Image (cartoon, rainbow, N blue to C red; front, side, top):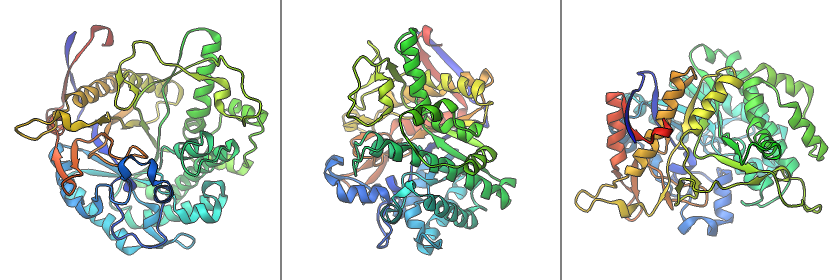
Length: 478
């Protein structure tokens, strides 16, 4: 074991992230302003841990001043959240802004600027309006692409003077993968063609919003990006069949967004494989041209755990519709280090490996870690009896190790701009609700959602102030 100290550059982001639906709550929400998550919660509440969901969340919409003060106390340089598309407009077809909700966003941005915390805004973090699902089948429709561009135009008009870093989507692959590919979330429809159509329309929507952003002059003072969640993928072995499984997993789940949004085109191999399995999503050459001509300025990358795969050992059921799992099986590395609460492997070197990939394969496009964190169940067991503070040394260790690999990659020329923790406060996650806690700040559900700083909040503030990361690593990890 070795003790290491490494300097954190002054321009290296040290922030945190969350989303509108996971924090705001429904206070002030008007009839007809449900999002996809609201609709899921209303139709399938029993799958949400202890019934907690977006209805109350952390009540951020009423307590943002208190929370921004805690952001400042924790040393955050940046905070990323989303505008709730479903609440920002009262008329999605004509782009009529809900002035009450827009004023809340205005006030939040002002409060953040006063506290010295730079805001980053995402236009969609799963908050697709329920109206657009019910009328157009959501991102199945090219009409929804146009309505998203209209929404983006209204958001830029309203907040461009206060926000310099914009993002179209957070994890644009997730909803349709859980719903239409894996069929494990409401409304549980296995439809691989719809999965790919949603993927394509979100890629197209990002390109069209980027074109609008530049055409209207916002790019002179701000940037437009996207937040992706590529899973750093490792093959079980060096054998050709396992290597192919990892290659194809990466193709279907990672490159499906990385390539068009950064390089401007889909991998031809992906299009060929989809066609060979009759996944006949609708796209045109004109749309491919728009995608090619309007790539993003920067990319946020959400990194939590590695993904390991092996070649499939079972025969595919011919009655089953095509799923990319035709080409792979999941693999669990023996002896792996685990976060047992979440069931995720802990392997901080994913940050370095992703950084080197961005450098070598994606033109060293500016990027940052937009989410990384550790969710722990029953975190109250780590409460100090005297101070009442959660002693989350496990989170401090986890965060430190991931930042270390980001800084190491940066020293080797990777264009990594910073690190953002998920999450600033404990907040609601899909289905797991508050079961696993991620925050620097504790939310006490039994006591009117009282906020309390955890040990990690004080550690993060010290890291930001001193700009020196100190940690202990195994010699083989350095």
